[in-house]
Image (cartoon, rainbow, N blue to C red; front, side, top):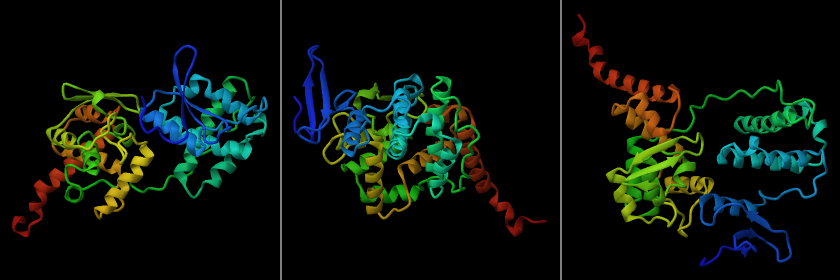
Length: 342
């Protein structure tokens, strides 16, 4: 039995005795089916999407329209083979596109339309790039399937990416300050230590739970790259998890004990940082701090790839080279002393 069922969530048993779940916000309104197992992080993501309207479909889409094309696209492996994180991201983009041009004939979408959509997002270059990626994925498949004669995204350039340095890495002083404000026994401390002592991305830590741990090792298939990682539960993390509070399905949970989406967790974690007097820091910045710790401690390229789920050498070499420069500078700064000059 499900206790304290969330608002608008309905359960139904089919004639094949299968339990299915729906969201219906109005008594006689349309139902939106949740297509995953109850209680999982993906289930709660779909539930929140349904409440916010992200899961709405354009019913009875006219054949050949952009909305019709998107519906066909969602039925193919070109869509389902994308990671869950990428599908969520592109679903949001496609929703906005369909609201604006869902009834427009797909065959009439031109390169100028794609460029206009890119330029309309020029103030946020990251979103502009994601828009191009979403439309390119759709029309590359559509052209191959011969739903359209030409791919209007061909030749469309990405906007220039500003060099911001990405997410700010945490320093050891930042971590210590957070720990002083959120001691062991608070859920906010669970959040920090799961991030810091696993090095997982935000989308992976919100899924991590006891079901992933065997013989004190957490086995996780990463959301972004589908890479399997095996992460021993370090003593510091084991102590924090034992004190809790944790959720039933996931270590990281909200005040209600339920799993959190990576978006809601990101917002809640940012609030926890601000409460500790830390601004401009994020969950991903802790992943950078974890990689720095490992590299400074002498982790090899292969070891870093194994821990953080990277492939190739680029990311691991970045942290190794940075750690090497730090060590070399520390070891050789005395050479700048005037007493060493001849």
